Image 1 (cartoon, rainbow, N blue to C red):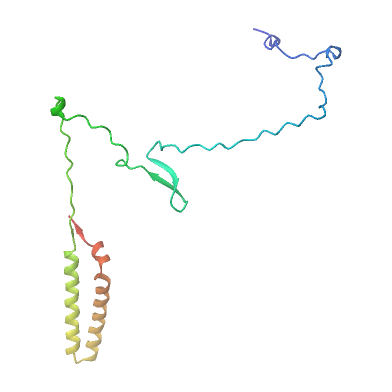
Image 2 (tube, rainbow, N blue to C red; image 1 turned 135 degrees about the vertical axis):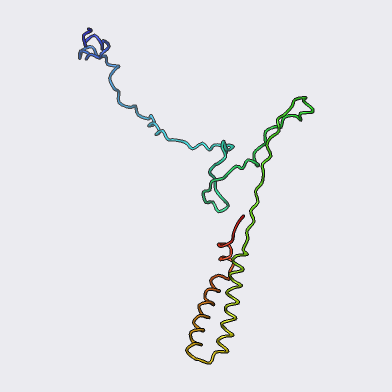
Length: 166
């Protein structure tokens, strides 16, 4: 094992008071010399860089911060290889994507609305023919309920929500 005192051989040792020379001492500042200016940071504007990725921060027309997106069709497309006839190479055919189409149908909703309209018309006829006031009142309540249901269902929002897609 090595002793600890041998590890740090370059330690600073105090010098004797008589060995310090006069030139090594700190001298007072001379008259007429200007004091050193404080060191300050300086602003150096950079040139705008080309975005390196698909997204980059920026500002919109109003100056609000916004994230911009570099769409693939906006970027430079890679060079296409020469046609197989020109190069003499056989290329594999790329699979063709099949497109799906959906058809929305509101036939069921339309039939339901037509049924409610027929029922409303029948109730109006029955009310006009009814002679008993208690039965007429009951028919009017049924008519009011059918009209509320019609108001709820006979609009575009209800049709969209209850359409059938195939």
